[in-house]
Image (cartoon, rainbow, N blue to C red):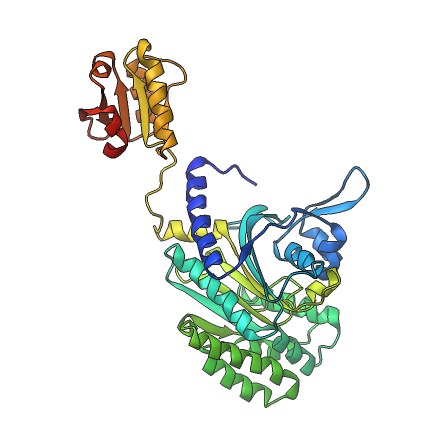
Length: 422
C-alpha cells in the first residue's frame, strides 16, 4: 500500500472522469458496494482458499469479516436481494479494493477499479456490451493500441471433461493452471498442470486447445476440427459465434481475437470471459477483464439472475498512459496567487481571492503574511503560473499588477478584468 501524491491524484481524477462519462453514456447507474463483507459472502463462490488472498479479520463482536477484493461480489449480492429492480439491471462503480497479494509491478494490495455489470440476460449481446464499454473506456483516455482476448470458460471446462478430467476440484485447479500459461515459463506451467492432477496426455491435449488463438473465424474453425462436433461443447461454441456476429455489428471485431488460454483466475466465472492488453505494455498485465457469472447471484439471495460484467484497474491503466505519454497537461496547483505588496492591502487581497474562487478560478494567497519577495518565491516554488500583486497605489486607481511567472513580465490590469486576463 502506498501514499498517493497530488500529481498522481490529478491524473487519477482525470482518468476516472473520462471513464465515468463512458459508463453513463452506456446507461450504467453509479453505485458503490460496502467495502466490508461477511467472510462467508466472499467465500461463497471462491471457496475457503480465498482467505489466503484477501484481508479478513474478526471484529469486536466476533464476526468474521473481509475487505472486498473486487466490486462484482458486492453488486451481485445487492442485486440478488433487490426484487424491485427492473431487468436488465446495469450498474457501475469506481472504487477501492484490497487483495493480500504479493506486491509486484503494476499490482498493489490496495487499488482502484472501475466496474460495469449487466444483470438479467444470458444473451452474448450483453457480453458484447460489456466488452464495448471497456474498449470505449480505453479509447476515452487516448489508448488505441490494445487487443481484447476472448474465450468461453464453459467450453474449456467441457473439453476437460471430454479428456477425462471429471472431478470439480481438479477442473478448478486445471483452470488455474491454464490461467497461468501465458504468465509463466513453459516448465513452470507444466508443473502447475501436474499439481492439478492432469496426466501428461491430458496436459498435452489441454495445451493444444489453449494454443488456438487468432481471428474469431480462425479459432471457431479450429474448434470444429479439434472437437469434431462434440455435442457437449457445441452450445459454448455457438455463444462464441453469436458474440462474434454482435461485435461485428458494433464495428468492434477488428480489435478482438479469440484466445482459448483466457479463463480468468476468479472462480465465479462460468461462460464467456475476456481480457484486454496494451500491445506496447503487456508486462503490465490485463488493463481490463471480465466475463459471465450466471450462478453467482443465486448464492447470495432470493434472486437467481444471470449476469456479465467488465472491470479494469485504474493504476494499471495509468501506467499504460504514462508509458505512452498520453496524459494531457494537468495541473495540481492554483491558476493564480494573490500577493500583497504591503500589509495594509490584505483585506482587499482576500476580497479578490474570494471573488475569483466564487467564479470558478483556482486562487491562493499567503497564509503566513510574509513580505512580497517571499510570496513570489513561494508562488514560483509551487509552480503557480500567475501572480496578482495588490499594491496601495494601483488600488487607488482600481488596478492591480498581473505577473506571468514564466516570462516574468508584468502589466497593470483593472481588478474587474482579472478573470478575463487569466
